[in-house]
Length: 99
Image (cartoon, rainbow, N blue to C red; front, side):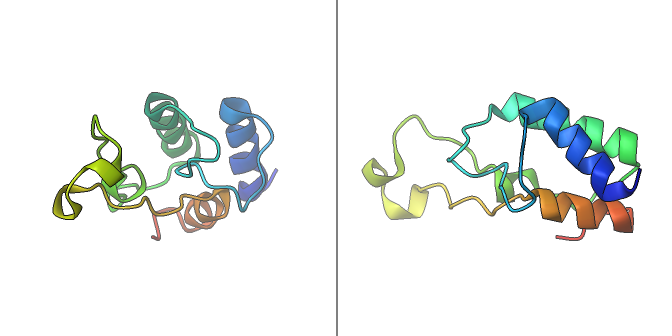
């Protein structure tokens, strides 16, 4: 089994059927942060990916009690960057986080 298949298998184990272009940090799927944390921990252990340059807050900004539109602009959470399966595959192939 190649690295891409390993990542897809791991993604399917944690989240079900998932396309390479889908994002884990996108509101379309509403994954629990804790589930994503456990997935990423499994990902780095099983695929031996160096995640030292991975910035959690880029993909999962801090949540506020109020929605962004009720908070002054300077205090709003930034929009999360997409964290796609394709990014996970490319990083696993390289052995380190690339983004």
